[in-house]
Length: 336
Image 1 (cartoon, rainbow, N blue to C red):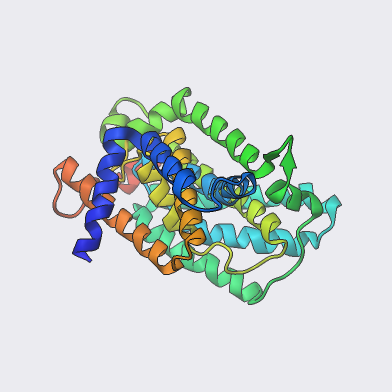
Image 2: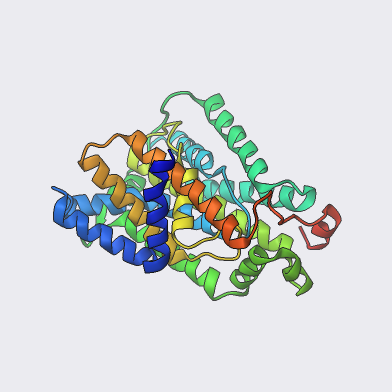
């Protein structure tokens, strides 16, 4: 395993020096030139279509990571959105908008629960969201252990269709990314989120409502996950209970490769989207070359481990994290 970590560390080093965009460009050039079938317009459109759902989840994850938090529940929240959207609509177009509103409300509600518990009870986000991951997974399988319902035709078009020759799912991702970029880089909330992730105590002393910032970050993560669930439901056409498995890991990998720091205080939406496309291209190439999916999972896990070690090394920490959540009373005074 130590030997296998070397190329992963080399990839991350290259990503830091040349930037995720340079790395993406290099991988695209190599794939276009040397991988049979990759350059076909249909395959390139499929890469974008299949990457869109992960992109939505990863953008939400970028907000929580930039705020010094983490959300492991997003995969199962996505899966619950897939199951419920198909089960509730049963393919009926007239129910699409109510179901869409209900799924977005579900994502926001889960985010509010996460933010409130973190702020009020000083629960570590890693432990809390691992717990809600299990709760959501249990809820899915308590409801059904097999595919249920059907996705409305309009949802199938959003996930798989084309508009002026472009993948509609890619356009959905682009619109959400543009909104998220403006929110993170051009609003007070975005600046306060980065300040909170960098040093929550200093941000609080500067007058930042840290509790509210954290809560909103979790809400954005939840909404991104349920919106992604709608795309996955449209792509599958039915409510498959295991649809969200693995999304949480892929989202963390994309956020970190895109420039977010697991220590908080740093993150870019454009970098995250570029990393999502990079992961999509790599996965597509490995599939075209008939490489086992287990190899892909192994590589993603290594990337996360290397990223954590690199983050701790840069911040000068070798023991348990020195970042602590505010005391319950202080969190409450922040307007939790």
